Structures are given as structure tokens and as C-alpha cells.
Image 1: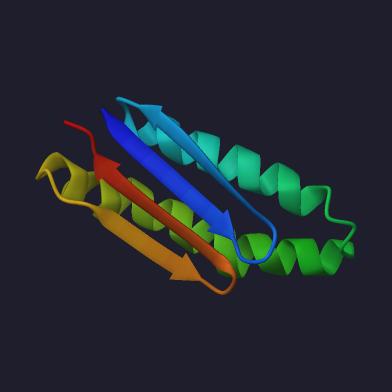
Image 2 (image 1 turned 60 degrees about the horizontal axis):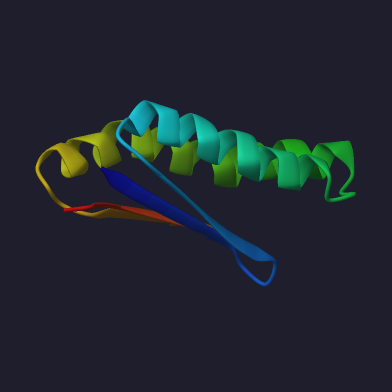
Length: 90
């Protein structure tokens, strides 16, 4: 089992627990993406946020995070006001 948590600084925090890193990455991307889309920011700012903050963290989870979790280690990554971390549950 994996516990994935994330925070948008000064806004909200959320978590997901499951067995599959790819599913966790998809949930992270969907939930944070929905918050960003509903934020009221101009379309250009939403694109910037997704490109510079969300995408790098999700991609890191899919690659470095998956490898770390497979070794039984924790993973974390921050980009701007966005932080995500994952740990194996025993």
C-alpha cells in the first residue's frame, strides 16, 4: 500500500491511499488539476501552473517516485506552491 499526500500552499491538503503508483499519479493530477481549473485564474495562468508546477511533480512521481516506492523508500517533490509526498504503508 502507498499513501500519497499533497498540499497546495495556503489552500488545501489531500491524500490518496492505494496499491498502484500510476493510479495515484492519475488521482493527483486529476484532483489538483480540478482545483487549478476552478481557481478563477486566467487561462494562461492555469496553463503555466499545470506546465511548471503540476506536470513536473506528477512526472517525478511516475518515475523517481515509483522507483523509490518499489525499494520501500519514501518520495517527495515540490514545485512552486505545490508539494507531494508518497510513502509505503506497512
